[in-house]
Length: 103
View 1 (cartoon, one colour):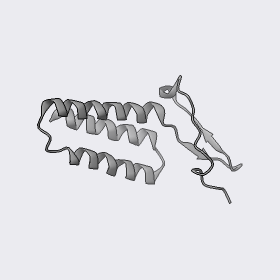
View 2: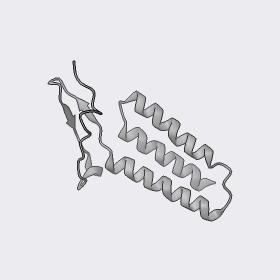
View 3: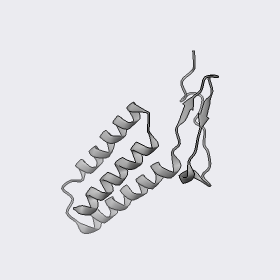
View 4: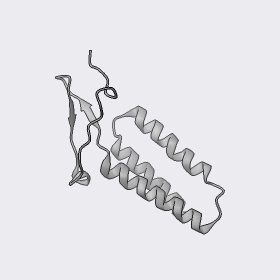
């Protein structure tokens, strides 16, 4: 059980760091993480548990290293400030349909 708690906390920490300052994403990601762990609460097979823990580790790594938030700046554009964790990553910009239009 200690591995599940550790994976849960690591995943929550990753979301808090990646979505810092974005209240909606912080709340929604915490709900999603909790939901995934709750739906697998009764898994008893060691092999399945290890697979689920590996999935959680991969998700934590992805959130930490592959997600960067763009912030709307005063000129109406979006600025991205990647950190050291993002070194070597490829930037993929979302389509215009996803980004809100500034008014």
